[in-house]
Image (cartoon, rainbow, N blue to C red):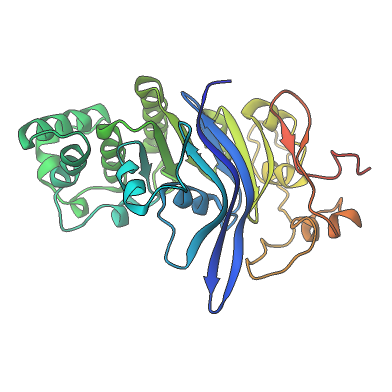
Length: 325
């Protein structure tokens, strides 16, 4: 296993709704190694984006971390001041957001936004920053970089804006690269180009990548390991090939059963019954049990621990795998 770059242990976050606080992440633990891509998957609302925002210290005002540890290269981030955390963003950690039109400033040119991080984090002068930013645009496959540097985000397509976001992260060369559904709004051709680019950057930058997605096809293509979230809990984790070939949690099996199989004309797409619970719902025991056809009395009373299963590095939180039969 590669050396752990990002180590998250027992992370817990809450959000205030009205006068009440509700737990969104429940003692979440996982790690991202150097030169490794870890994909986090699950339905919308399961806590994927909240995890990345907690790491980057970008939670909204009504959200906060109430427990656990976030370590980057052994440094405990939760113990730092907000100012010190802010200095790590861009320099040590970079993030590509799902919708670049809202992440990029519509009032500033692409060149201004690209050079800002270089001036702040790498101490370049304006001429050197401009030239290096131009080279970064070329690296991510953007033609006519001089013209693009003078343009505003609204003058670019979604695919180009996403490449600009990647170039902004590439420019400051962070150790941890976080991508929150970066291919969702892109057509399949541009999506493929972005994925190839991220894989190349991981090797060239010696970085670790935390990739958030709901697209299992993307996961199969780029992931080294997969973390499956459900309603704020990690329910399964394992190497990508092991998890796809031998899923052990009923929820993971349900996600995979929703993927069309173009090689099997007789394949049936089976939806997972029910819906993801709201954070305000108090569900005792395993939060997946109302939707699980294998649920037992034990599942309705207690939260399952994490049990090793299958091959090395494969873990599942389910009583069926922990002596529950």
